[in-house]
Amino acid sequence: MSQYRGSPLGIKLIIALYNLFGYSTAKVLIYAVALFYAIVSKKNRQDLNSYYQAVGVSPGFISYFHHVYAFSLTIFDRFIAKEGMQESTIKVERVNVEAFEALQKTGGMLMFSHHGNWAQSFKIFQTYDIRLNIIGDEMIDENLQKLETASDENKRINIISLKNGMQAMLDIARALQNNEIVIIMVDRVKEPNKTVEVDFLGRATLFHSGGFEIAHMRKAPIVACDIVRAGDQQIKVQFSEIITSSKDKKAEIIQDLAQQYAHFLEKVVREYPWQWFNFFDFWKRP
Image (tube, rainbow, N blue to C red; front, side, top):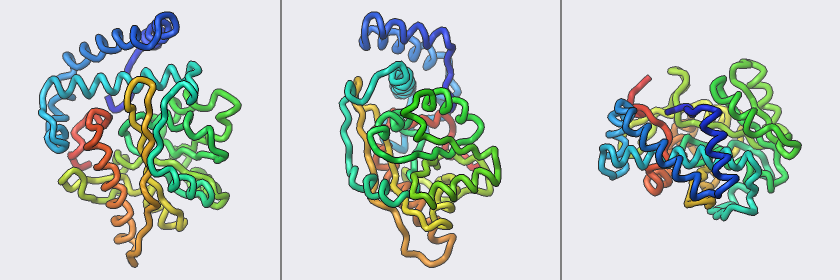
């Protein structure tokens, strides 16, 4: 489940129920689908036991079902947002938004993870006059393009695909030079040579180092961001303080930046453990 799984027909059915009968009725079908998947996906359930222990919840089927159901609701919210659910229909709580507003003026790196409803950020950030540049790999580019670049309002969203090699690096440099915001997700290791070790949930853990390396190289400020589903049509957007480092050596700076981000992420993961959507053995080294 590290990727979204579902048929177009199933998604259309759920959206049709939502349009006809409202949010609560659609949730009944989502509940049934989540229960079915939780029953048949035994391997994923076993892989997550160490995570549940790390965040202080009981491992086993009940925890896994809560986890899958939270993921299913997040996917549902993403698609009805695409259908036209605007921010005015959602209750949005913003925490430490001043850090993001400072980043809006200077440009810089906005660090995300696969925790919470990060896809809703594109709706929320439409209220700001800022261009977002999203660094993606080949797997998520297609999903992002379909989801977020259909309307004229979303022309301020630019996808930078890492599969384009040197061109991607030039696009990132251009965006930061123009005081734009570059978004990257750092909680999944894609390349064995692009890692940084941090203490996360009490264990030595590898994060993707690329975003921290870019920030150091371009002298760009970093703000961590996490967007959680706080309830039906309720979103909580949390920003960290601006992350910088006073270390001297490159390796120490990158590790320090990553560790500060890890502290922020650990806090929100402990608060919302069911919204951590890395459905695999996260602790395994690549």
